[in-house]
Length: 247
Length: 236
Image (tube, rainbow over all chains, first blue to last red; front, side, top):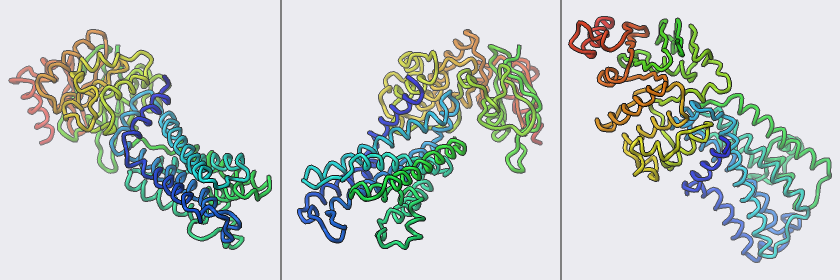
């Protein structure tokens, strides 16, 4: 078994034994169930441009989950390891920082994708129509996951301790929620703010998922959104590998 | 032939000069003990040898390799047991040994190490539930799981009861017989006397004595008396 595979198996085990970490996954899933269970939330609404509340909140809950996993759980995990001295201990072995990051990213990526799938499927079970373009929605989820995990990896690499990692991660997540329109509707953003936030993972992801739900947006807009996410992903991983601190 | 060669090693933390020019070598198959008061620079020395700290000056070669720019394969040859390194609270000794063993081409079987280090009964107990001595034994076992050519052990038996200490000494005796080179940082004169072929005493960042325990103890009542005499004299 390779070092990455062994570390991944270990991460899965440790995660399964840490119930507190699961809260961030359970809450959005619970919210998706509750919203979809309310009959009024399943009916189309003018406020959401003809989408139901359940449809409109599917991208929001998905983005919230992905951002919490990427920007809070991941930095906290690696921060804990650094504080314990476990990273230092690993450094004395042939395992590399890249092996550890790959293992953690695979676990966190899998959590994001499974959570996104459940959040998306739950409304369908209640008869709520899904995304007009499921394929585009899937691409949006994957690209957003890559961007948020990469951003979280940078935070993990440079923030020294778990408390600081959790605080900074939450602050960064909050800016991305703003960019995604969770604090204030993106439809009401001035044009310059829309353009600016579309260059952030939160804004690009919200635009991609929203367009996939309604079928709006051109192929160029889709390509631009995916490109923004991928640039964040690649730059994030490169920066993280170069700045990673074992202690 | 020297497997580890340290020459003119210097290291400072800010304005505090921890090592001011250490020179020593460790032959293949030798057990070298490093003694010295707290803060003398013992841990810094072994961490520079293991490539965990970057030296300010001097040269270090470990089997011809520079630990500051370790080539692939460097870490597979060295097993390190560090002070103050904990494992995730929920990992068990069995899982930890399996995990660390998977990093090496030919690891010691997990069950053999659990047995040898008295951890077999606690193999599935979580790390957070192990006693200090059990955690320490696991830490030593992890350092040796990869069958290293060189073992660097920092405060090997701190916190262990006399029986566990003797067990680990017995294991190191076996390693010595199989040709493993060991660098041992210790505060225990009994341990140094029992295990080490040679001892260096570091005080205030420099070597104040270098020789076999028997030679260093000559003219004193014991190695401990020699140590106290040497370190008190240099500190005064």
